[in-house]
Length: 461
Image (tube, rainbow, N blue to C red; front, side, top):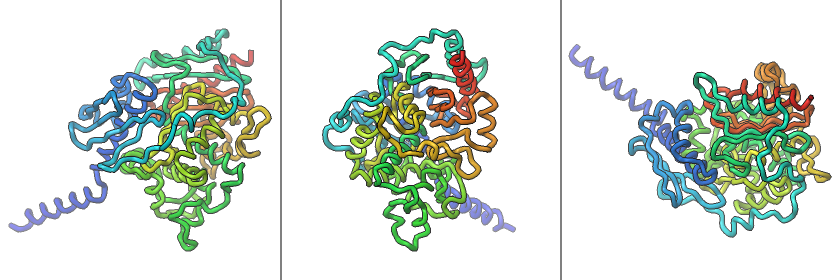
C-alpha cells in the first residue's frame, strides 16, 4: 500500500509530461504573441493606426482575450513590434517599407525581396477601371443610404461591439456612399485577413488564363511529385475549394495547423506541404488557410520567384484595376502570405470586387478566364464555400440564413476575420465593402445583412 501513492504520482506526472510533449502548449503561447505582434505591426506601420487602440481591439478577439492581462508589447518606432506574455514566449514582427511586416523566428533572418520595390509595384499602363470616386469622401445624398451607414457604424447597447472602420457602396461602378471611422480615410490600407484568399483566387485565375496553371492538373508541389505519393492526386482545384483531404483543418485554437503555420514558421507552404492525407481529394470540405498558402507558393513558382510575384500581382491585377493603396506581405521564405495578410484601402477592396461583378472583365479586357467567376461562386460539395469566396448559391443552412436577412441568393463574398467583407451582388450591380474589428463570432453577419438590404432598398428608389 505504501508504494501506491508514490507510484500513482509518478504515473500522473508522466501522463502530464506526455500531454505537454504532444500538445505543446508553448506553441499556443507563441501563436498568441505572434498574432499580437504581427497585427500591431501591420496596423501601426502600414495602416497608421494608434498602437494602443490596436492592442486593445486585438486582445478582445476570442482566444486572445484570456491572455490579455499577461500580454505586453513594445513598438519600436524604427522597424517593428515585440510582444510577450510577461516576458515569456516572445515574438517580434519587423516592418519593411513597401512590404509590410514579417514575423521573425529565432536567429534566422527572413527572405526580403530584392531590388526596387517601388519599381516592381509601379503600373506600366493607365488603369482599365475608370475612377470610381473623387478625392473627397462621398457623402450619400439619399436618406436611405445615410441611414444604412448610420446603422453600420452604430454600436449595440451591449457587447460585442461592431467597431466598423469603413463602408463603401459602389453602384454602376461609382461610389454612392462611404464612411470611415476616426483616423481612417479613403487611402488608408486596412487589413483584409482572409479576404486575401480571394486575391490568391484571382492570381491563380490569371495564371490559368495565361495557360501556366490548370485546375485539373496535379498541384505542382515538389514534395508531392512522386506518382505513388497519395498527395500527388491533389489538383489545383482541390486547393482552391479546400477539398484537398489533407490534415490541415482550421480551428483557430492555437493547436491547429493553420494557426501554427501562420505564426510559427518562416516557410509556411513548406510546413503545409508535409501534411498527411486523411480523405480522398474532392470528397471532404474543411476550411483551411494552409491550402491557400500552398496556392500562393504555386503562384510564386509559376512566375519565377518572390520579386516576380510582386510585379505579377501589380501588373496583372492591381494596376489594371487602379488599386493604389495595397500592401502585400510575404512570409519568411519569400512567399506571398496568401492566407491572411494583404492590406488595401476600402475603395481598393471595392475595386477588386468590381472585377468579379463584371465576370472577370474590365472594359474590353479579360483579366480572369471566361467562366472563372461562376466557378468561384459555385458551392463546393454541401458547404457554402465556393473557390476563394463564400457564396449564397448554396443549399447550406448558412447561405439560406443570409438570404433571409437580406443578402440576395446570387450574392457571393470575400470574407476575413473580424467581419471584413466584400459583397458582390450581380443582380443589383452593387459591390459593398465593410471593414472593421467585430469580435462577434459571426463577424456581425446580421449587421452586414442589414447594411446590404438597406443599400439595395435605397438604390431601387
